[in-house]
Length: 112
Length: 113
Image (cartoon, each protein chain N blue to C red):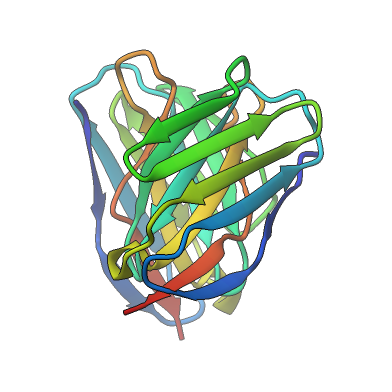
């Protein structure tokens, strides 16, 4: 059974810093990996999708990498801003129709 | 692009009462639909998924059931709620356009008292 772990569980940094969020998964036979953002009391917003054949994806100040063989992904946030404060979730898909397996998330606070 | 509606947005129900949460999708046809639950202190957990009308797969044995009476409607139900059913319920489908990116609705916050 696939398990997804996110480290750290919480992170607080001053504005302007670059930071890295980590995600690991136990079964490397994945179809894709998604990073989501969740604001308090809200649904999920998809940030980046990496197909299993890809190594990384970029969107603005966000860069996500995937090392499928080692079961790891990182989300890099450059020049962090207070508006980046949220919970960031990593999820993997196994390739069937049976949905995503999520990590518990990293709660990120960017201090002004 | 598609839009997912969830109703109601919030709900407070006593233990033992029935439950019906509704998810409807616009802008796509024959979507795969998913129900997830996010309980306090736990990650998002897949509850049910459906690949078509009347087709339901359950991931976790529990007090809940799901139905898909129409192509773009997915309903989560319970006959008798438990305290442990409290949580944030999210409906999802795949975003159209070939990227196989899961797209989530706004969620329903359920509190069982």
